[in-house]
Amino acid sequence: MRPIVILGSGLAGVSLARELRKLDKEIPLVLVTADDGAFYSKPNLSNALGAGKSPAQLALTPAPQLAEQLHARILAHTTVSAIHAVQRRIDTSGGPLEYSKLVLAIGAQPIRPALDGDAAADVLTVNSLADYTRFRERLAGKRRIAILGGGLIGCEFANDLCLGGFAATIFDRAKQPLGRLLPPQAGQFLRARLEQGGVTYHPETSLIRVERHNGGYHLSDDHGAEHQADLVLSAVGLQPAVELARTAGLTVRRGIVVGRGLASSDPHIYALGDCAEIGGLVLSYVLPIMQAARALAQTLAGTPVEVSYPAMPVVVKTPACPTVVCPPPAAATGIWHEESGSAGVRSIFADDTGKALGFALLGEETTKEKVTLAGQMPGWL
Ligand SMILES: Cc1cc2nc3c(=O)[nH]c(=O)nc-3n(C[C@H](O)[C@H](O)[C@H](O)COP(=O)(O)OP(=O)(O)OC[C@H]3O[C@@H](n4cnc5c(N)ncnc54)[C@H](O)[C@@H]3O)c2cc1C
Image: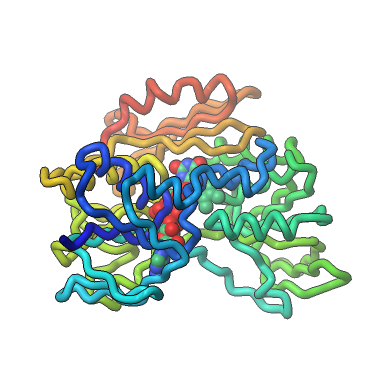
């Protein structure tokens, strides 16, 4: 009997396998992954220094133990290079593999900023435990860390690096941190708290050149200013991994296009996680992955189910400024209403009838409203 094959052993692949095993203990299951197959929780990468964790401590379950728990074969260090949809077969670095159903949970790739200079290729990105292990090795003996991008990941790494005794500097094109998620007062509050926590913040600034200099780096920005750093980390965003699907003839837009049943344009191939565009949405967060994994597990176990998304607030792991944001749906019209004080900011996005469609809460006390407010928000899908 051909197995169900899941490509990828990140949160999406492993969560799906776990959900499937709750419903069906016997169906043959194979996970194929380019990495070592150990399970780790990716959100822990950007607060490990503050939590006093080494990269090795972040690997929660080694591949053999995970295979046993999931009653599955895990083909680690195995790269998939092609999908033959008609034959229901994939080409892997370990040979061909046939499937009954194929699930793409292949994640996303960091976007590399266009930079000049002889050290542009030295700029690091972190989107896996292996990347993070390299990053921590490179941090040894360094002090000044430049971070490109003041989004969620950039802010979390900056805060964490400061907690670990490093000097972190963020460069971001936008006027404020989390420019795409937070309204102005909330953004300025977060910036002030990050700065109090030791982060240096350069808004409306892009780095354009990185040169090697005295064992570190000489950086040039687009205002003509020069900066020094010992290490440069880029956190400017992720691009869903779509090439494998595109080459196989599946429909792709920003992500691999799937409907609410998680099936792609080929009825035997599904997608979820950072690689997928589900019902028109690309949501690179844990909670949407959990929703999708639960729905798809039921479908694969024989009961077709469509995924629905309630509003899912994102907790930003910046201890300098507890922050929760629940963005309004992309097509929503309305305005932000912000109330700020010294202890926090409460921002509500409401339409012209006064109905709340999104929120941002900053500060220890203010974020306690998260659960109540989330329950009042309209679902996303
Ligand atoms: C630093 C950081 C912090 C984060 N913090 C939060 C947070 O606090 N809250 C939150 O909600 N979200 C957070 N996120 C986002 C969240 O972690 C991701 O959405 C989630 O982990 C993505 O899981 P995934 O399984 O889709 O992808 P991935 O974890 O990227 O897994 C992809 C898998 O596919 C495999 N693969 C890819 N291509 C191939 C191939 N050709 N052949 C074989 N295998 C292949 C890889 O080896 C890997 O196993 C964070 C992300 C980062 C980077």
